[in-house]
Image 1 (cartoon, rainbow, N blue to C red):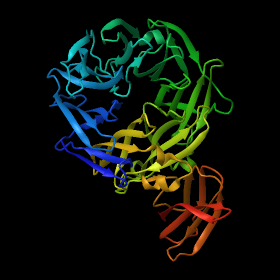
Image 2: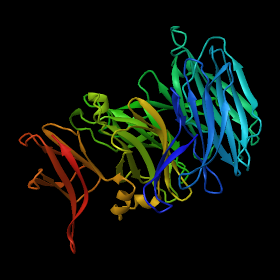
Image 3: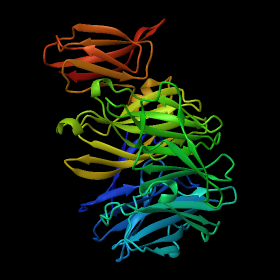
Image 4: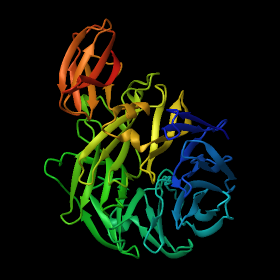
Length: 507
């Protein structure tokens, strides 16, 4: 396996992206569960899965340096009678744990295996820590995004949902939720099955869960097949249902519906629960929003990250955790995709969207990033390192071929006072879309007190206006077909107008 790494600067601390090599592989490759080792290197699993068929599936564990170099790797075959549903890493007392979740090829059983990563980057032998046989065939979603919850004593909680979805075609659908508590040595000390019918639903395909503030019980969100996100279930320390909390949205938000994609986690800095999710409007496409659960008043305080004008923009893909910096900033991400899904164009108008906000849901900054224009981006995980660098993992697609991808942004790239640093790492503070477009050109940016100027191919200024909102729509109906240059400038008392962002737009 060879890793291709692209440094964005000669500085060793600069941002980079890399593609772990998956030559001759025709299946999706997942990258999950970034763990930062004591030496500053990153350890992460990468695996292929064939979903509903069995073929030479494999998984790998990679060690990558802070500057994007593959240091070491381990390769493993998957057992013949099982499909690898999930591989998760976590760390406790400087020890890296590896958990494998297998499901039988006939969907009649599942099991969980455990191992440790040793100092010489080898694994102890895998041992089975849990297994179960099913009375009826069941499957489970890929849940590499849900690493175990670790309490103050080092005990771990892991959970999977099992259901008849896409397996048996039996109706009514059925499902169960498994909760396991492991001790510090990763031995099972408590097991609980929760039937979905106990929650007034016959079927669900995902569970998001976190501790409450003092880790005495659990807060559980479920991806339901009926109006998701209307309630939250509270379980005690033995996973018994003790309360169902129905959300009362803030005034003015009643027309929004939360979608089934979400990044749901507990902020280690203040113990509060935050979620980044799609919200759907009856007449518009999805937008991205962040909410914080106020359990005292049982209201959802919500911040709208993005704005969808005239059904043009489509936000897809969410990191399944939020990233929390030591400075108490919170990072979330999504994917902006204006062109690929709507027009099936060869030119992908797709960018990684990064947003930073504070503990009170005040949006601080937003950025847009792409790895070359021809790649379609699918990023799933976001991680904040000990030095507040940001690592995202996922995959990119070119000519219908997917590549696993890891991107690192240094903390300095998110300095709001240094736009040049952001540009050095290919982070942009504004985008024009759709591109190519028609009678309307939209400029999206988190900048304020900026001036938008548009120039034709001959350099003549044909439009200028102040930027006051996240999205500024410009009437281009009278413009000739062709290429235009747009620029954003900020007025400076000493230097006059300072250009901070620019790009080309084609009508």
